[in-house]
Image (cartoon, rainbow over all chains, first blue to last red; front, side, top):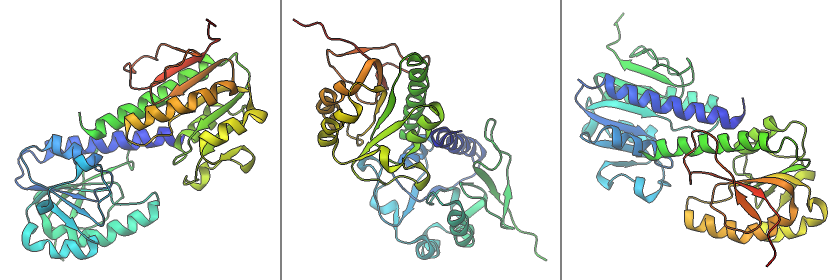
Length: 167
Length: 167
């Protein structure tokens, strides 16, 4: 498989997971949180999926297509390791869907970033919220969900926010 | 359609056209020329399609994944408006397939660049060569070819090198 093949499959998996997550949170109130704007393509897809929900976007430095930049009041600028804790006052427990694809082409670095961000993200998630993620995440507050048809396990990830069993 | 949808369709169209072009040039001798390396995904796809052909790549400044950088002897560095004429000595009449996707996200600028490059590219093309192009190209030395199934007209382009009728 060429890198072009692999990239197309990854984008198809991403889209299938986002579309599926939109169904999964049909009954869950709350806003959408995009962790990493990038070129804005996924943000644009989220806008079409969720015309009735507020979509917040975390990004260090905006470099998206001008059509795909969120309004200033929903743009959370800065390093997410700083901005996610600070967003608690506004978004704590209010997020129904979060999407994490903040990474580089380096899978190991992406997993490390996801591991660092997850504990900061969990307090923002509504009960029953869904997290769609490029990197694998292991956290007792998240349960892996089945992937939609056609998405190979490991290519993209879906998690449900759960209440961890306290030991 | 979101920008994510549109991007996926564009990449699928690009791949379908390259795969189809590989069949079309089955009987045409010659090398492959990639006009613009970018991140190297398409170059990688060309490598899988043409293991037996030399693949030359024009690029102003290499910024591809290290696995997707062609060997130095097949990398033509510089502005293509300068390097294509200079490549005549080495590649004149030897190219069986060229792929042009050198552009930005600006469709108008891409068409202007394609119009500027086409007269420089034509002398490199073998008789019967195929040009796969993101931008539309109008030139009497090129005849538009039917697109493969599933590719909407205008989304990507296929041309065959022909001998223009002299007036």
